Amino acid sequence: MLQLATRERPAPAIETPAVPHHIVIVDDDPGVRTLLARVLRECGYDVTGAADGAELEAIMNARQIDLMLLDIMLPQRDGFELCRDIRERSRVPIIMISARGQESDRVQGLDLGADDYIAKPFGRAEVLARVRAVLRRAADAHMPLDVPATACFAFAGWRYHARRRELISPLGAEVDLTAAEQDLLHALLRNPQRMIGRERLLELTRSRIASSTDRSIDVLISRLRRKLGDGRKTRPIIRTVRGVGYLLAADVTVTAE
Image (cartoon, rainbow, N blue to C red; front, side, top):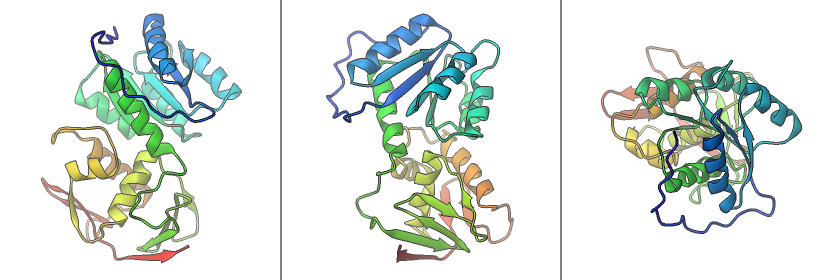
């Protein structure tokens, strides 16, 4: 059962857009949906609840969704299966929630394309912080302040257009990336030929705070490698520095778009 701490200080006021973000809570527990919806609505978000995959499908067909909070333990089709199906047709940001906090569940959710994972019970401040972080990463207009808005990165035959957030393969095809994968690739491209530790990558990608044993970055690296076709054992594009972090081993050229 979700437990929202009652003695926490109110979250700091945030500036909400003219059209509020639409967040969908997918959980078969009506109490959890009610509590989460109340917290999010108090901060200006537009919230819709769904008890299962069928109700979620109806919402997706009717309205645009800006963020999804997806429980794992659902009737008929669980959250993992729904996440896999959603990722085949949509880039909507997904935060998986569950009372099961094992690392294997977190890794599976991230590997299926989720942008974050939080375990029950959690408090108001944590929910809001994770929601804001994922929405920031997903915003099309988001660009690090120290990178020119028109930058185009060329590496190993690939091109990444920073403003459009597009990854183009050597054959000219656009490759779909999740918001977290976009930020990870961008961080690596801004630091070519330099080893970056896991904790630093978490900071650069604005991902959730994690311990040194957390595998979220490892999972994102694995997903990014697959999309880059980077399965080579010799001279890979992204090289593992065992026990420390990762390094983008390709030469990178930065030009104006």
